[in-house]
Amino acid sequence: MRKVFYLLLILIAVVSGCSGLSPASNVSDQTLPQSQEAGQQPARAPLLKAKVTRVVDGDTVHVRLNGTDQTVRLIGVDTPETVKPNSPVQPYGKEASGYTRSQLEGKTVYIEKDVQDRDKYGRLLAYIWLDQPTAVSDLEIRGKLFNARLLLEGYAQILTIPPDVKYVDYFIGYQKEARDGNKGLWGPSAHTPPPQDQGQHTTVYITRTGKKYHLEGCSSLARSQIPISLPDAKAKGYGSCKVCKPPL
Ligand SMILES: [Zn+2]
Image 1 (tube, helix red, strand yellow):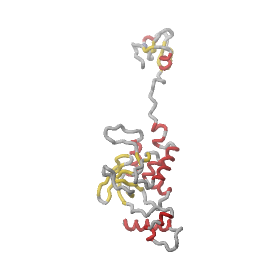
Image 2: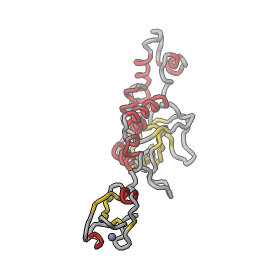
Image 3: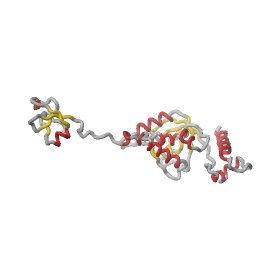
Image 4: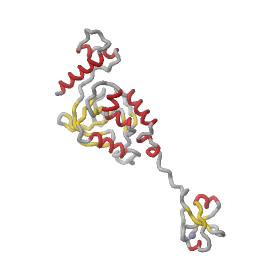
């Protein structure tokens, strides 16, 4: 089955790539540099069919590959941490994990490697195709390459670790698209921490003659109860009541 797919890839490369070459071109040309000179990618290794068995986080999954369990680290992308021990969950980490789970868990995918086989943790370094690409094109990559989807949807930032840079030019463009579109982690609510409530919206109460500010209902407010914002009360020199203990 894999052999058939490999042949298919060659066929596609020939059909899509040889229009500018001499009519004498044949399949063996795909191993020669001239296919690169024509602006095509070099002949690709066959993709490995695998099944995603578990999602660890946005950029790390387990797959069943050739009968073995493999941990796959997606190349070129970095999603916010959710499971790193002793570190807080980063903003948008949960969303990224959820997206990867929804897109990959239980799915049959196609694994593509770059130059390095594994990282220092022994994880397989890979691109994950949701469907088999029919060409190396922007349309195919943005539509079917999950690493690219993460960038386009704003669930990941680029993480380039040479020599694994096969799609880096595409990825840079996709990240820019997501950032320009305020997608996901680039959105205003995701990467700006929620504003600290400094009491701007807290209303306290003062009296006509007193020097303290109070919570609503304080016994000191029996004669007059004038609402005022907490910052204003402090700015005007009112002090905090010792009885009702309003915020400082
Ligand atoms: Zn009071």
